[in-house]
Amino acid sequence: MGKLAVYKYLSFIMLVCTFLLSVFTFYGLFGGNSHPQGHMAQAMLVYALPLLIIGNLVILAYWLIRRRWHWALIPLLTVLCCIPYSGTYYQFKSYDPGTETQSGLKVATYNVSSFNRETTGFIAQDILAEMKRQKVDVLCMQEYNDYSGERRISNSYKDYFPYMVYGVNTRHVIYSRFPIKEHENIEFANSNNSAMWANIDVHGYDVRVYNVHLETAGAHHVVGRASKLEQEGYDVRGNRLLEAVYGTYTTGIIKRAGQAQILAEQIQKCDLPVIVAGDCVDVPYSYVYNTLLGDKMVDGFKECGSGFMNTIRNTTMMRIDYIFHDKSMTGSSYYKEDLSYSDHYPVFSKIVLN
Image (cartoon, rainbow, N blue to C red; front, top):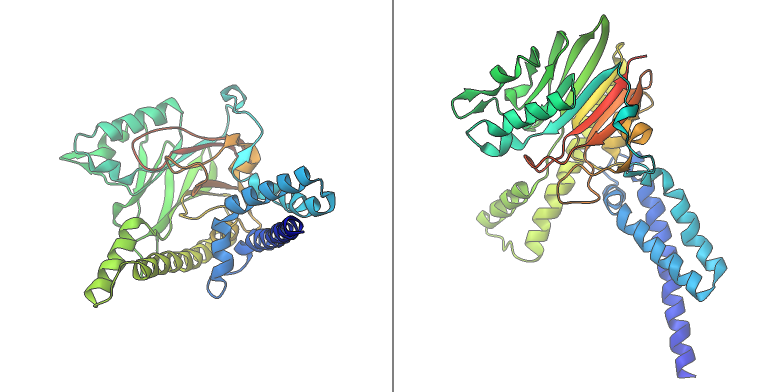
C-alpha cells in the first residue's frame, strides 16, 4: 500500500510539472508581444524558452514510457506550437554556396569588440580578407575602433570599400562598395549605444541600411552596479549580488524595448526598401525582435538559413545578431562564419533587390 501511495504521489507531481511547463512555455511564446515594462516576468520567460522546450520533451518522453497517451498530448501539443520559435534557431535546409544568386546585395554584420584592442592591425586586416572572400558589398560593424596603434583602419579598407560613414563616436561604421548618398546617426537617450542609417545607391536602386547596436547588459555592467551598491554600504554578496544582476538585466531589457520602438517607427515611415543589420542584444521572440520585424521586415535566417544559428561564441542557443530585410526583397543565403576575432560571429546574407 505504501508503494502505491508513493507511486500516485510521483504521478501527481509529474502531472503538476506537465501543466506548469506548458503554461510557462505558452506564456513565454507570447512574451515578446507586450512591452517588458510591467510584464517583466513574461519578458524573462522568453529567454528561458529553450530550457522550457527541453523540459516539455522530457515530460513527453516520461508519459510515453508510462503509456499515458492522454497526458502525453499536453507536452506534445506544446512542443508542436513551439515549431515557429524553433525555426529562429534551426533550419533543416542545408547551405550550398552554389545556390547563392549572383545578383543582389551581400550584407554582413559583425560586432568586432574593438578588434580585441590589439595594436598591430592584423585582426582588422584578417577581417577585411574574409569580407573580400565572402564578396561582401555592405559591411556593418559595431564596437568599432578606427585606430589600431598608429594605423587608421579605414585607410586600408577603402580600396575594397570606397565608401564609409561613421556612427556616433565612431563606435560603429557602415562600409560600402556602392555610393552612400545620405546618412544619419540615431542617438538613444541615457545610453552609450546608438544606431545609424545610410542610403546606398545600388546600380540606381536606393536601399536604406540600418546599423544598430542596442543597449548592452554585459558582465561589466553587473560588476559596476554591484560596486556601486557596495560603496553605498550594502553587502553585495548573496542576495545583493543577485539584486545587481537582476536590476542590470531588467533595465537593459526595458531600454532596448524603447530603442527598438524608435527604430521601428523610422522603418515604418521610410519610403525606401530597408535592411536592418547589427547587434540587437536580444533573443528571437523578444519584444525587441518582434518590434523591429513588425509587419514590414523578414528574418533572413528563417527565409534562407540552414542548420543552427547562434551568434555568440561558445554558446549554442544565443542569437542576438541579425540581418532583417524588407518584404519587397528576397534572401538567397544567410549564414555565419566561425571567426575568432571577437566574442561574436559575423553574419552574412545575400539579398536580391526585386
